[in-house]
Length: 136
Image (cartoon, rainbow, N blue to C red; front, side, top):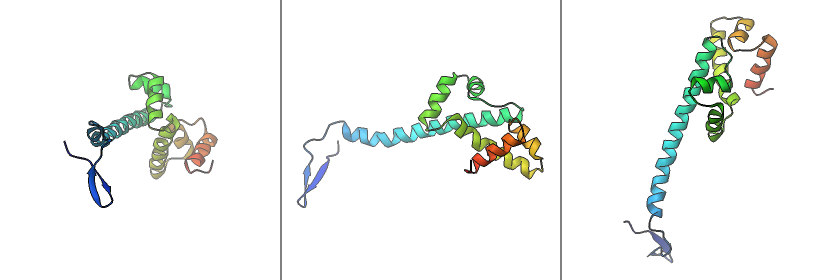
């Protein structure tokens, strides 16, 4: 095992208070965090993909329907999103905003975009569009 040193008055002295497994634990921690982030990002991507498919089928995605689609309980999905610092709405809004841009580029009308995004009417669509832009 490598010796851990502390610099004291220009000299190098071994740390007397070191814990035998601490160095190993400290070197493993970054790997653990990277693996956890990769799996959580993959989970977020699965939910976003599921939301896109639901919108394409003309369904209004909800936490409950997406959890069922992903073969888990709504409580589990909520907890996993919470672990990533997200709510379902924070995941849903960017997907809907991306779809909105795609539909606008295709020349769809506001009422058609509202319907495809799962909004009840054009007024609701304009309201969420404001929220996406940070003005609502």
